[in-house]
Amino acid sequence: MSEQKNFGAFVMGFVIGSLSGAIASLLLAPQSGEETRQIIKDRAIELKDKSQETFEETKKKAEEAYKEILSKGMKKGEEALDTVEEEVSSTKKKVKKASEELEEEND
Image (spheres, rainbow, N blue to C red):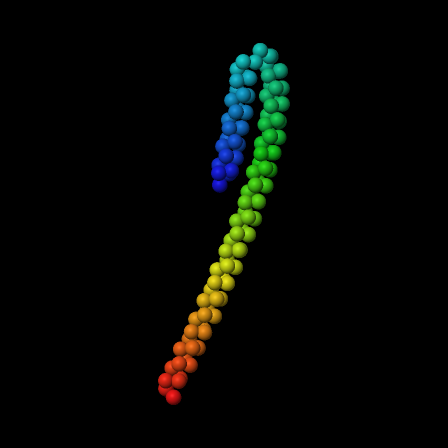
């Protein structure tokens, strides 16, 4: 869970840092308007590519977490079923024993 929080914080920091850097470079840039627009275009493409990579990494981690949770849930379900089956078997034995004892008393 801690890794997920750290990864989320990283993504937020990445996005905020990218936007801050882009804004600062625009405000401090000595280029002409056309050059600035080209730089903005190039940086937007870079940001899009990095965002896509981050999305893919996040998607992959989410899928892995889903599979792990599903696997653990299935294992817990199987353990619970085994426990229930053991309890049913034990209860049947006790009922049979009690029934036999009751029949002996009645005879």
